[in-house]
Structure formats: structure tokens, C-alpha cells
Length: 532
Image 1 (cartoon, helix red, strand yellow):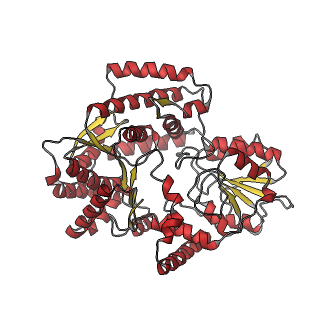
Image 2 (cartoon, one colour):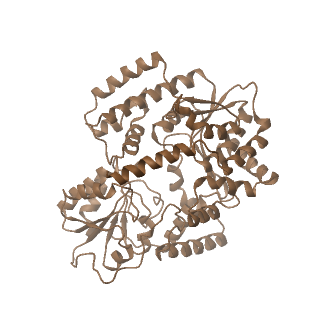
Image 3 (cartoon, one colour):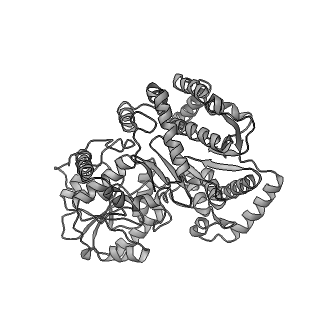
């Protein structure tokens, strides 16, 4: 890291800490709204606890403020926010602004996962037993305590926090992470045993800070909810928040009237054409650069040959590789190394390309991997997929990326690496085992699907429209996210979007929808309401 980068990092941290002492007008208005609307929901004699993750995501705090208060009313409970990273005195002073937001919607306690002496001793004993059996990365991934699978959460938290592409068994930070994960498990195991926890509300079912608690909730039949401003999720088991949803896309679409189906397909066709024409942010607000810019006709990218041409589309190494579960590899690094070995056994033209706006460090990691596998050629990330298709790319390999529908739309055969959002459809290849995946790769000349564009449009509508409850909290979530992307607004402006359209009627509509969802026991609240 050079001096300029160090200065920027120090400056960013200083700016962040300084901002902690100034409450912005958007947050202040949201605090006032909460105090006025939730005044009568605070329990003076609570008989239970609703646990709510302590984070700083304004959009999730809007949905969370509603969801937790309705749960409090239902269970005669109190809201207890929790954090495994919030530090105590004197560092707690930097959280005072966030604390004010939480207190404004009746959060009565904010707790940290701090162990007592006996828990510390148990943690040490369990940790020592665990590390005796760790010989491989898979051993880390498979760690269980009392039958509860916490290894995947430790594994992925290590990748994210340490910015590592894969687990390094020689890294002392890994073993500190294992110890921390065991401690978090013990804290919540004992907390749930001693307290009447009625519900758990989190942002995601991932990482040790939230997902270990979720798994203890599943084990103890405590409902686990993941509400946000674009929909509601109720999880009963590991990966149940998204896993059943993708498999049901086709069945859900068939429940629409024929007229609705036709309109939906036309909408999807229009949006997908915009994306493939190079427009950024089309139903993907996080995407700031297009992978479908105009081809550079003056420069040939692919080698001219009669060989099968294979493109690997890489993923971010650090961000929740097992987001959907059932991937054939424990992380993206192992996936790429496996493909590197396959490249040595085949007579194809192999290429690899990153996303147009990769995270720092991705380029270096990929180049280090392919240095071991000289048959794989690195393609600059800004290279357009349109150019690669025009030059004859035959197969695209992804773990579960959006190229599954984008490149299929352009007639390319796409092979996923396990369960993925496209799993209900036949326009991709979906290997169910590592042996099947390897067989596909070794015999690409035998793979050929007739791709139905209508199926691609159907998937697109289901994934980007049907699954979003557009008007649940905001007048239009989709309009908000589009405007925010264009104006590059910070997330905190969502408070303003919410408050400018909220009124008594809208408030009541939100409460009615959330209560229906809570009482129903259904898995989802999506664009058309309750879904299983």
C-alpha cells in the first residue's frame, strides 16, 4: 500500500468517526417519526424478547422498526438489539447516533455477545478440541458445536473480514475467528436457554454475527425473519430464505393469468434488451459499469481457431460464496483452481474475465491462479461480452452469476457450479454433483441446449420483478433505487423517500401487510403478497 492509499484510508476513517458525532437531518426526521408513531407500542412489563440485529443500514431500519414493533405487540415483548462488534466504553460513544435511531422505535436494550468467565472457559475447551481436528479447509467449513453447523459462517466471515480469497490454515486470524465463532455460539445458546426469545430479526442469514443466532433459532423453533423494504422472508432452516424460492419460479409464474404473463414477458424483454445494449444499472442498481458495451472491432480478443472457446466469469472472492447453498465448491478460489486443472486436461481455448468493476485485489488473485494454468488467458475486465460472443465464445462458466440469463439470451451455453437462481429453467446446465460437473467440462462437444428466449424472459421477470414487493414500504422501491443510482445518493436518503410519502393510510397498509405475513407462517411476502 503506497503513501497516498494510506492517507486516503486514514482520512476515510477520520471522516467516518467525525460523522458519528453529527446527526444528519434525514436521520433526525426518521427519529421524530418513530417517536410519534411507536409511542404506544412500548411495553412496561414485557414477557418476552424480540432480538434485532444492530446495524447501520437505513433501509433495513425502516422495515425493522415496523417489524419489531408489531412482533412486540403480538408477543407482549421488548426489543433487544444485539451486536458482536459494537465495542463498549469508551468506543461506544461513536455509536450514539445509531443508538438514538434504535431507541426511537422502542429498543430497550443493546447488548453485546460478551462472555462470562464460565463461558470463556468452555469456549477455550471447545476451541482446543476443534483445532485438533483441523487438517484441511474443509475441516474448518464443517465445524459443528452441539450439532449446529457454524463452520460455514466462520469460513465466510474470515474471507470477508480478512479479504482472503480462500482459507489460509497458516493464518492466526483464522484461528481467532474460529474462537470468536465458538464464543458467539455459546453466548446465544445460553441466552436463548435463559430468556424468552419470541423472534429473531436479522438482515441476512450469513456470517457469524447473525447466522449462528439464526441456527440456534431454528434448533429451538424460534421464528427467524429477514424483513427489508423490498420484501419479507421467514426462515425455518438453513438456506430456506432463498433456496425454495428459485425452484418455484416456474410454478409461481403459471399462477398468473395469461394476460399478466404476456405483459410480464414483454416487460422483461424490454429490460433485458436495455441491459444487453450496454445501459448500466438496469434492475441491478449496484452495477456501475456495463459488461455489454460496444465491441472494439479494431482488436481481436479471442484466438482464431477451430477449438471450443470457454469463458470463465469470476466472482468476488470475499462475499458470501455459499449465498444460496449447495454450491459444488466451498469457495470461488477452489472453483477456479478446479477449472484450472480441467483446462490442463482439455484441448479448448480457455479464457477468464472479471466483472467490469471488480473489488480491489481481485485482479492480482486471478492472475496468481492462472499463472499455474497457462492454458487460461486473462481478458481485460472492460472487454464487452458482445465482442466475445461475436468472436465465437461457445461456453460460459459461472458459479451462479447473472451471465446465466444474459449470455443464454445471446445463444451461449452456460454451465453453473451448483444450485443457482436459474435452477428452475432449462436454458442453463445445472450439474447436481462434482462428478457430473467434471463430466460436462470434459465433454463440452456433447453439450448443446436449444435455448428458449421466452424462458429467459420469464426468469428475468420472476427474479427482478415478481420477487420485489415494490410498494410495501415506499411508494415505489424500484423508483427509489433507480433515482438513487442515477444521483449516487447515499443510503441514508431512503429516510427522506420514505417520510415524504408516509401518511396514516400508508402506515396502516404497511402494518396490515406485515401482520398478515407474521400470522400466516408463509415463507415470503413478495410483489403479489404472501407466498410459500
